[in-house]
Image (tube, rainbow, N blue to C red):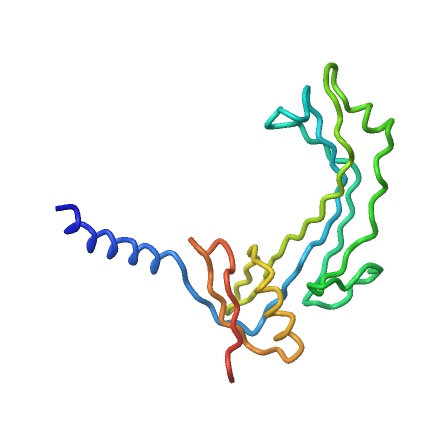
Length: 170
């Protein structure tokens, strides 16, 4: 009895999937990877049992990588993913950590958080778009950029991200 609805559900999901993503071919593009370091400390009344500790951020440094090229002032890198990193921000002192502690709270040890945010800017016709993307798209651009190879971009749901980039053979 329930099986007769399955084909119509599959058809509806397929139509939804096909309508929610689109593609664009471009010869104008730039990929960026914003690498950053941030010191963070967790605060809680009981750090071992509190599921949602309060998190405070201290020093932060960042560096913008463009198309895989070495950024000006880069000293750390490239790493095993081809990314350049900023110098470390100063580690927070015991005094700085204690100053942000509230009554009854205990403070965790400072943790260094590494983060990367990828974006792709591309042009089609007279319009230009900048969207979040991922490491794989960034690497495709790094490889294609020196020869200006056109790329076919697969956009995510509602065209809010770039999910895939593939070289187009001329």
